[in-house]
Image 1 (cartoon, rainbow, N blue to C red):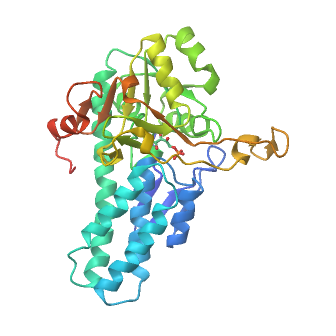
Image 2 (cartoon, rainbow, N blue to C red):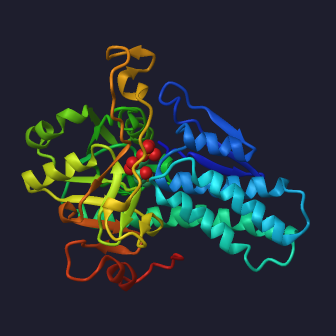
Image 3 (cartoon, rainbow, N blue to C red):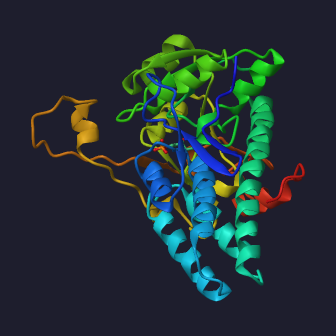
Length: 353
Ligand code: MRU
């Protein structure tokens, strides 16, 4: 049983798992240019907020190596331009902008281009390693909340392949497996691109975790019929008041959790918080191509030319969120204390924040 990985840096090469092909094919691809990294993110070969950030960080560092200038100021300008290009690949997950901003800040004081090139790789590596540590800690905190629970529902894939390792919402299931705490996970298939059916089911099966697939429209019935005890999801951006953007369909689940009186947990690293935005209404929501809804694979399922609305994410208001599980600890968005105060009040377990 293994926990699969999706972004791998080895021998100075960036390799990603092409998640579009799962579960039919497990195919890794080496990315060498800025354009390839941009397109891999845009096409969802690599996806999931933290994984996008990590891939972009390595992509920026790789592209920077090819810049010929020896003037540090023009080098910084080139890197900034590359960063803007990468950020434009997907708008909702803040981890992307966060990661490339870290690289840009890192070379602020660099004296030479050679030094800056080394620093960029180092920073990308740090972002990856910190994310793995963060996800492990998220898993630990989530296990505390899920200590007396067995049947848990999730949506999309907020798993190992959406992060450096372990995942966010799926981290407690991976850690639980290591420790003999078994869960029965129910995975919403996640229309239109089936990240639940294709990716979460595959990932949990690889790791030997019990998983049952349902369609998104079966969630309410399943909560009642199967006695779901908690819902746990990932996040693409969390604003200062705790509003949370995540895969389309997440809001439905939060409302169901409220109706059925079960906890609704969001699991996310600090890199997913955007405290510069006050509420979720300011989060840019990616809208994707009509064909994703009007077809399944190559099969047309709606009349040609059908008008389609295809938002990739929705925003769950903080009032429906029982707790946000971060690497620093558990945040209660409906507490009197602000999210920011809670985020920085809880003791860090040694990770850089
Ligand atoms: O469109 P995707 O597949 O990138 O959407 C991913 C999600 O919504 C995840 O829940 C989120 O990015 C968290 S991944 C740890």
